[in-house]
Image 1: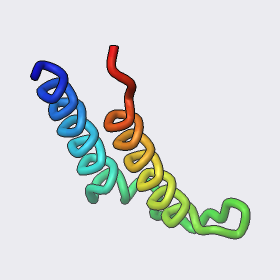
Image 2 (image 1 turned 30 degrees about the vertical axis):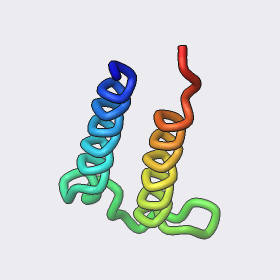
Image 3 (image 1 turned 180 degrees about the horizontal axis):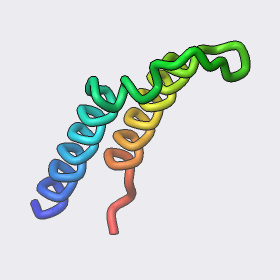
Image 4 (image 1 turned 180 degrees about the vertical axis):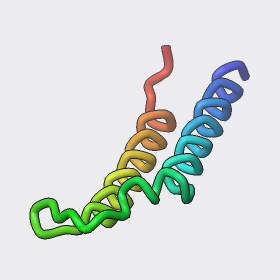
Length: 66
């Protein structure tokens, strides 16, 4: 029973991290006319942070029991 509580807390923390990363003040830092490997900086940040949140959620959910 204890494990599900910790997993829920970790998922809530990942959710809050996603909210912070995809919020306007952070996004405005990357709204510049810079291109990385042919991709605008803002799009690269959006997809990179989205992939990071998904990877962290998978890591939290699929973590083996101790």
